[in-house]
Length: 280
Length: 321
Image (cartoon, rainbow over all chains, first blue to last red; front, top):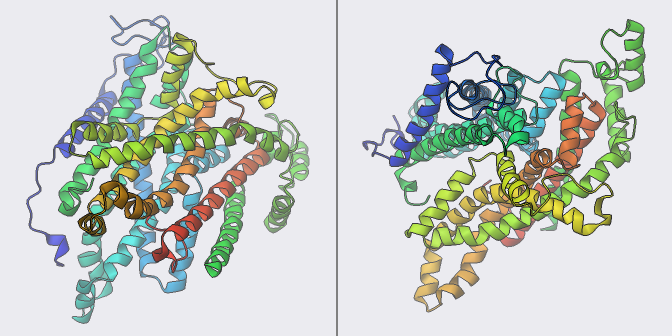
């Protein structure tokens, strides 16, 4: 194994990491719980319109009489699904593409790099709207679009990381001692780039959740009755003065999830790379 | 430098060409016939064929592509499926809202982020230094449309200081009313944009503060302000400027979403409408104009960066983006 990847330091306890895990874990728990149990059916409109928090509806109801707590719990699941789905697409397509570009000959690499630059210049949200325009407004369309946009970012990062690792002496040493390229990739390249990749994928997760919320706010995300937080906010905008809970709660949960995941990313970076502990 | 500008310009043209290919192919290859948008449900096969002929989607792809390039070159972006009006002038009139919104938000976010980022780095060990970086951490996690909703609730609905949304029918003919309706949207976008910018400024400042050249300058007798002004600014500016191009592009996107919150007749609301109505010529036009803007911004950012940082002049594109 190469020296930098097998640094023998015990991961220090990072309060950022712990706090991040608690915040994100809270949302994950709620999302998982919603699979097994929600207080009301998501399309149950029997509750009376715009009820304030209390009993029997703990957080009140929306303008159609649907239970707010139920919707928030389902929204947690949708937010997590969109984040996980988009990151999975981005990583599965982006990492191999970046690896290939990093190893490719000069002109092929330049070509891929230029293509990626153009794709990245193509803003995520616009690309997503394009996909939604061609397909239909659904969670699947939104996640595919966000994942595809993320692919370019992940591929470019992977390419840069691979090129940096390939200039290292331990790669030359491994090659000189007869290690095959596949072994070099699994034994030396991947172990040295996965940390940075993981941190960035975590940051991308937060961006994906926000992008999905923006899309559903514009009416281009998951259709009713299983609505995402973005759409809940859009629907609550008109009644923000009479029923503030519906306009506040989904936003707060969004922030909790994204802050949590970002803190996990920061904490991971600090734990994996002690040289950066001071600089951020 | 001239060689560089020429090469970078060639790259820009190539990018634009590729962007138009990507845009063209994505709309054609994704399932769903654009002709459907012209028809109601249950149209006869003859009607479908007529609609396909009308918009040209029955012709071979290369033909369609040449036509699309011709349209782009002559700035005739086609007619909207919905209103049958030409797309170009519609986009141009929407830019009257989106361009001021984007530029003003961008400027305001700079005005907020530069001093705050500097203080957050310079005073990173004090409580307010930490507080500032904490707030910027929070800021990048807040959805921009939610900030808009909250600002509307307080400053428009509760206090009644500013309009909650909308834009004067006659545009900028009453500059005061038009400006009033842009105040809250600009603050909304600027607040969210400055959060990520603060992080870059802070990190660039931290690098400068820890650098050997600054210590040397101080050891040779420069005052802190003098050394920062003479050496720190130029070194610290390079990475920040490389980000600014991307920030400006992101600001444009933030504007797209915020226009919906404030019911502003800009590019963003045009795009959302067009997407909902499957109005392909409009979608294509808006996306091309915004991609064009983003690529040109990237080009300018690269040029400025080269001017400031001679070390980069050997490379074609992008610094530490």
